[in-house]
Image (tube, rainbow, N blue to C red; front, side, top):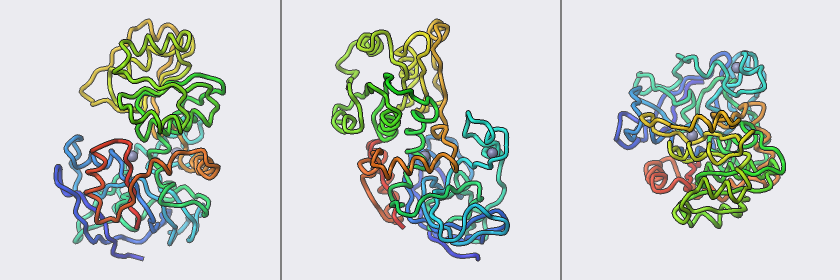
Length: 363
Ligand SMILES: [Zn+2]
Ligand SMILES: [Zn+2]
């Protein structure tokens, strides 16, 4: 059924979101109508309207970290039914393309193909939904391949964060690096994503987790998540040399969660000769160039990119929910604010102040 929904819409760059009433078309074949219960605020949403990214497709409905309940299914939908609890996901998992059939990537081919459908409109004008989701609306219509069914006994206003931040961080350790038990891990940047990496590494059985952050206030909380050694780069002359020294030659894995070209270099160089793996989670500004010593790669180190933690979004994301239920994830301590849709702009103001602060809209 077509319906009216409240939503936070971006109309152009460097202007706050405005709360609008949008028209939402009903689900067509292969599509699902989801009533969202919650949506996290992510830096990627902010970058669509704060001028930091050259986005031009407006009006735009941001939001890609939601959780909710299926209300209605279009023809041919078989994997979910009304009443199911779901996490809508940015990357589809069709299950059939070469990427989905492989065991090495979560990047379904359909993620890179445009989906021309625009379920949302404003006064008859189509509204683009970010990631084909648009979770800053109370209801969304998405493809069946973009919803992950989860168990019903978990708080949706917390597990929504698994859709982006959780998958990105936990997955980087568990599904990109596949951290082996007994190994040594370095995490650069202990904000929300970095803390999720620490969770993932600890769940995988890492013996030692070295956290690197200039913010001393993050030491206590990161130790709760599993950091065993905390390094403040402001207090150490040569971070790479220091890590090599205390690990006896370098870490088995490192994770860059800041988005700095210089830290990408350090993440590579601090790993061990022979098999050290540096996983890149942070995104440096596109104008930056990353420089490595050629020898650091020749010596057998590996660099891995990690997109949404390499978590297959429909078949592997439920495992993260299981870890949450088992009390292994720090999501509760990471969600710092619960807000209404009307407070979304102040939620983004908080996000700008510190990356460890996470606000979740509760619908
Ligand atoms: Zn696929
Ligand atoms: Zn995100």
